[in-house]
Figure 1 (cartoon, rainbow, N blue to C red):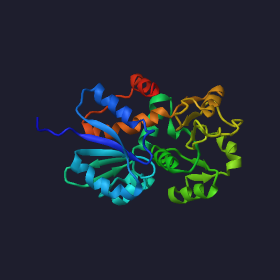
Figure 2 (figure 1 turned 180 degrees about the vertical axis):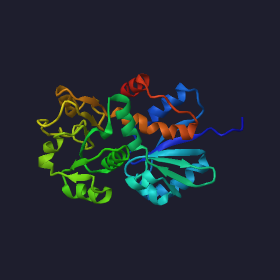
Figure 3 (figure 1 turned 90 degrees about the vertical axis):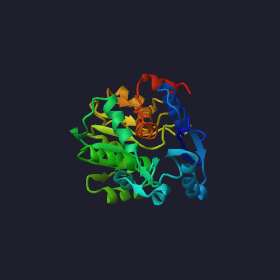
Length: 276
């Protein structure tokens, strides 16, 4: 009766839109585990104090979302190599020894989504990546880790793409945004990491003239589940992978660390999140 019930949550500002509480709550209920996962709206000015206070309240960890994913690195005692490489953390563990451990599972979630939902060989050819924001950093790092031989990168603001090339190395080649359709020639993996195509955002206007039907095409957007970008790729005969799986797979490592149960990611999990 004296055992503490583990608590976890998602820290962000805003955070009310997050599907993470529903996802982790579903898994807690599914496996009959004691524990709670809650949304935590935390402003930037309060972040450091909150991270010091949460473990005293019984929290064993937390996810981190906008705008805190970069800031938490400076506050963590231990930062994994992949979080340092990406320059952001999305998963925190409050260790029993009092140290704050920061990791990034976004790239893991991205790769597992492709591996689980497509016949995908990352080494089969170049990848074309649209966008150079925070999500692109995780995608690029993970693609390089699994052996993609070349990454062609285009962003509306070229300077951001150039900065990623300078950071991640010569396997990255930068293409002007207006010529983005050209980088699809021979690409076997095509990724949209921008918000274009998301509900309330303009569509991603890119010609698929050079897109091979043998390419695996994915979009990290999952509202709507099938963006116009994915629908058009499917019409070309490509294998398409929606962005919901990335959300699900990135959540699993944190859940396992906090609640000592590796959650299964299946159609029932997808259906629950899609029903919200």
